[in-house]
Each structure stands twice: as structure tokens, then as C-alpha cells.
Image (tube, rainbow, N blue to C red; front, side, top):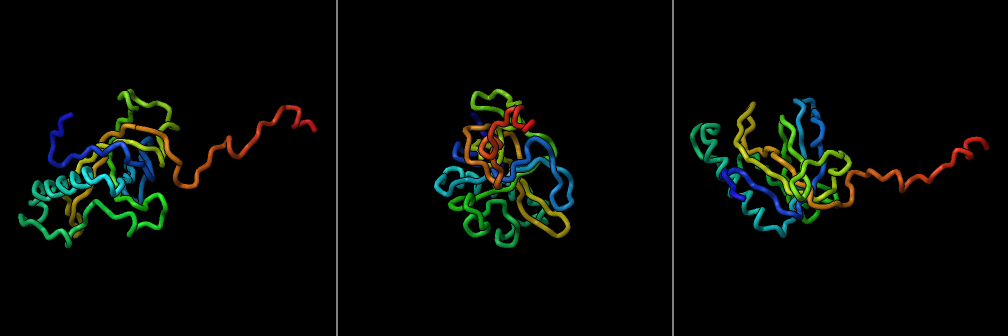
Length: 182
């Protein structure tokens, strides 16, 4: 697979999805509806972390016009790669970096054999997936930085669901029709 863009990164197989909104767009804080996901990347995956740093630098270079033609100090702008240990009080984020990725258009969601996944219950917050990410510079209403666009998603394996959602089979038992008559 050839990475055609300097600003594009495809995550590894240990990446986990959180706050997954890949089937239907949602409005966050009253903004435009978007498809979105928080992508959890293990801190041990240094190859992907380094690739993200390179892609962010490339996005800054490609977007210099957004910063008045000058390369900004990274400490003065918003950056997409965030530390889950420092920014989230959530067990799932411990030992991970994360990026919040979104798109106005639906991602293609495929299985390990790159076949489209049609059963929406197959991909959820907590499963493991490879994610195509594209980084780009922005300057909007005084906010400057690099954001992360959501590309496509390839589910790798199941994981413990996040967000407190439980399986109905774990909560209920079968009720026979005769039980309703008693």
C-alpha cells in the first residue's frame, strides 16, 4: 500500500475506536452534522505516533497560508494528537494517545478482507480497527491549528464495548409465552 499524501496516516491493528459515529452523522456542540470517531492509539505504537507527527508537520507546511505565511510555533496552535493519560479520566484512554477525526461524508467501513460491513452492530466503540486519517491546517474564528479528517475504517477485531453499553443477552433471560398467562 502506498501512502500517496504526506498528510495521510493509516493506523495500525491495535487502534481502538471510541465515541464511534461512523454510521450516522451527529452534531457535536450544535455544529454541523459529521461522521466522527475518537481513535485510540497505544503509546507503544511508536511507528504510527511518529507518522502522525510527520503528517502534522506536513499539514503545517501545506497550510502556511492559513498561518499568514509563517510557520507557527506548535505550542501556539491546536494539535490533533492528544495524551489520553493527561486529558481523559477514562480507563480506555490510559496508555494511549488519541485523535478526534471527523468528516462530512460517510467513511467506507470494511472487514479484514476489505468487504463492506453492512451489519451496523459489527463496528462500535471499543472494537479494534485501522483508520485512514488525513491531517490539515485550519484557521477559523481565531482558532488555529491542525485538525484530523476521517477517511475509511477497516475493522480488525472485536473488543470490550465502551460507553457502558451492555449486551441484551447478558441482562435478560428467555421468557416463554406461557409465562405471560400466569
